[in-house]
Length: 420
Image (cartoon, rainbow, N blue to C red; front, side, top):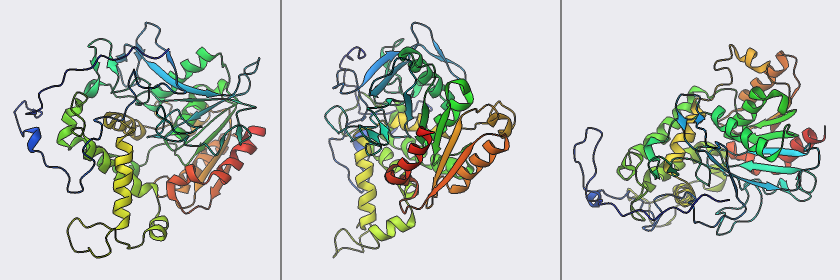
């Protein structure tokens, strides 16, 4: 059952905003747009809201009247998990596969785009009938993560205590919190043991935590283009992206949901996406696709004249605005920074001893965000504990995004793991 439809909020007075010290600052109407003007009617949030088309989503309240405790302290009074399934669970529940999505992904891993699902399934070439993850053979589950914005409880959700969106009051969460919420979905579905858990990037972090937190429930894992712990450089990139959102005056300290269309923190979110898009792709990819081509061949010397690569970044920034939420970006991005398999478990070797699963990890050769040495480290640590871990480096020019695009190679790795 979908969450109850949200009442239409009253439009607030947006003539002034308050700074952190309570002082009245600039009038909203006087805040200039970014020189690279975005569409004027962009939504304040691209989140899914109750009352929107449900599509393939299913919903479960995993708290059942009891608060959900968080690793960093505090609780959430209610946690809804939105998820999608494909295929049929067999009688002994042994054919279930969990697929974990990345930062700006969601539960729609397979299927066409529609009014309910703004994008085509992000691994549609891998998941589906007759494909590598064959939904005629396996029961496939993908869950929108806790803190997300496509149906699961996150900053854009109504706080049942205040009956207003959480906004800035949504608590800090970790990858482990995300996995514990997913485990409750598995319990509800009657899945005691997954056939496999797979995912890339932030999804790979969830995969590793599943194997460490619930070793008896996970016999096979495939953490792709990810790491055992967030590196200093990854944290640095993340910090700059989050700052871009927080410094957008229309972010309003996270409480922007009642603003008019076009008056949300779209500039900050778009710039955060552009920053990410630069390290999601490789120099080789940018150079071969764009080089030094201009949008307007006769316009070069104006301060805001654009090269084609700039147009590409602007396009993807605006595209994300239409399907994602700025606060969710902040919350999940920070959860990635705190990812550390060894936290509270002694050394990384100690943490890895918890993993009983057979592991297949893979790198993208041109990935500058999660470079191959990080996945080699996964193999090294797993094997040092006596575990089984295969390693594959995929020669692909697309950088970190290769884990989404190099589907033939990724699919071959999954196929071997699933059939073993």
